Structure formats: C-alpha cells, structure tokens
Length: 181
Image (cartoon, rainbow, N blue to C red):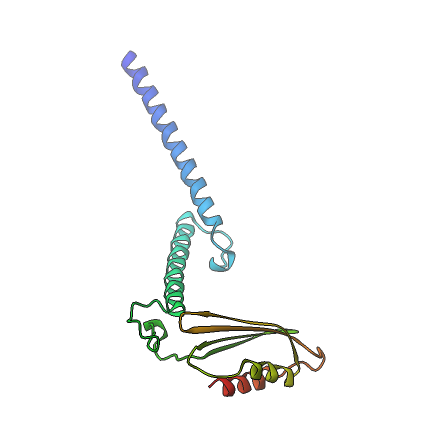
C-alpha cells in the first residue's frame, strides 16, 4: 500500500514539475515575442507559439546581419579595413565601387541636412556648399566637420527660408553633386 502512495505522490510531483515547466516556457516565449517590433510580425491576429518563436529567430538573425553590416561600415569609415598605411587605398569590400566623396541630402519638411564625406585629399571649398544652400533658399543654422583618418565628415543643418516656396531638393542635390565631384 505504501508503494502505491509513493508512486502516486511521485506522479503528482512529476505532473506539477511538468506543469510549472510549461508555464515558465510559455511566459518566456511571451516575453521573447514582446521584444519583436510589431512591423516585423506578420499581420495575423493570433500567432501560435511556434510562429512567434520563428519570428523571434528571424528577427534576431536580421539584427545580427545588421550589426555585421554596421561594423563593416564603421571600419570603412574609420579606415580600419586591414590594408596598409596607404591612406589613398582604403576600400572595404562592402563599399567596392563606391568612391568618395559621398553626399546625402535629407529633406525634413522645413529643415535640410547635408552630409558629405570626403577625402582629405579632395579640395573643395566648404563655403561654396553653404553658398549653394543659401542660393537655393535655405539659411544655414549650423555647420561643422570632423576628420577621422583620411576622411572628412561635413554636416550642415539649414532652415528653409520660405516654407511656402520651399526648396527644390532635386536641383539642390544636383548642384552640390557637381561641386563636390
């Protein structure tokens, strides 16, 4: 009789342990799913636990790839790509075929941001960039640059003079591109 009671209590213990394990796993899966941005999950209303785990794994994989890509970009921009000390030949495989200067124009309604990455060996006048911005209807709010290795990072923030008229960003971008190239 004692054997039966002992086996019954061990069954109850195993059931309790298993139930607690399932509850903990469900809570951990829910916590993991809560870290995934809504735009990364398919638009189904209810996802199975397996679907949520698959989405989490895919999201983590995407993040890992993004981290590697950003590391390569950082190495390129800092000039630490393992090549010799020749400052003229810092080319990362990720950026193969892309040459400096790099120009980016961000139009944020009434604000413009110009980002220019150039080589210290490329001669152009910073004031000319500012003149073009002003000619196209933007007042420069602040401008700055920093040098890292053989690269110069220029950033210019400007405000659109007349919000009604605005700035024709395509023409502005073309003029800046012609100047720096």
